[in-house]
Structure formats: C-alpha cells, structure tokens
Length: 187
Image (cartoon, rainbow, N blue to C red; front, side, top):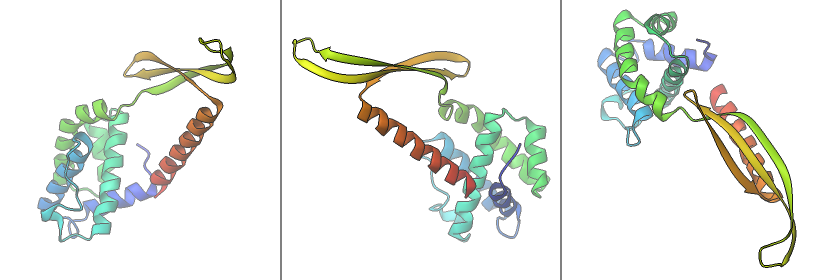
C-alpha cells in the first residue's frame, strides 16, 4: 500500500509505546474503527481513557489510522499486507495482531458503508424548451445528464435535468469537493 508521509508519521506515533501504551492503543483502535462503521461512533478526542494523550497527536493518529483502514479496505488487503505495512512503521507484533483483529471485524462494515458508487461514464445533451405544457413561451435551455455508476460490480444509471445555473453550481461544488479531498489527503 502506498501511503503519504503524513499517514506514515501518524502510524509511527501510534506505534510508539511511550505515546500509546497497550491499553490506550487498544482503546484507540476500537474507537477509530467505531468512528468509521457507526454513525454514533465515539470520538478519540473525547474518550476518557485517552485524555492523557495530546489532542493534536490524537487527531493526527486518528486521521492516519482511518486513512490506513480505508486504503486497506479499498485494496482488500490481507493479513500479510497489513502486517508488513504496520511493521514498516515499527508496530510491535502484539499491536499488529490487535489492529488486524479490529480490521477483520470492521472491514465488511466499512466497505459496505463507505463504498460509494463510482462514476464510470457521463453523457449529456442540451435541450431547448420553447413552450411549456400550458402553451406559455419559455425559451430556456436545460441539460439532460446521465451518469453511469458502478458499486461492487453492479451498474446503475442516474439521470437528471438541470438549468445552466444549476449545472455551473454542480461543477463548482464538485471542484470544491475535489480540492477539499486533495487538501485532506495532503495534511
């Protein structure tokens, strides 16, 4: 698995027994998985057994752990892949086993919940409406958009119609989302 430098540093901190003793590590791992599989999952920042750890460190480690978990689920990683990645960032065998047990339990839930459909194709056409059903002049263009999506091997199609303003708004929001995602993966 290829992971960013920030994720690697976060996992190295998580592996450090002077920062996370075994009890704290186990609790952290459970809370991290719960935050991904449950809408009411607890936060590592507010957990009473993790209060002795710096909040910035907790946030960084949580981001690194959840990124690692999601990447592992995305690639359908097996035990040897998980183990070798964690051992590369200095995880002890006991911590690797603890993490992998949680990974096995949470893997199916994470893949079901966080597996959004992927857009595989997009088609569009311009439609110009001259009159509506009440014979009123409209003279307004609209765009008919068709998105072909795929989730877990199953294909589906999403169709919608929008005006030029709505389409520009959609494109703007998609660009903002892409920039936010890019910033989140870099920090």
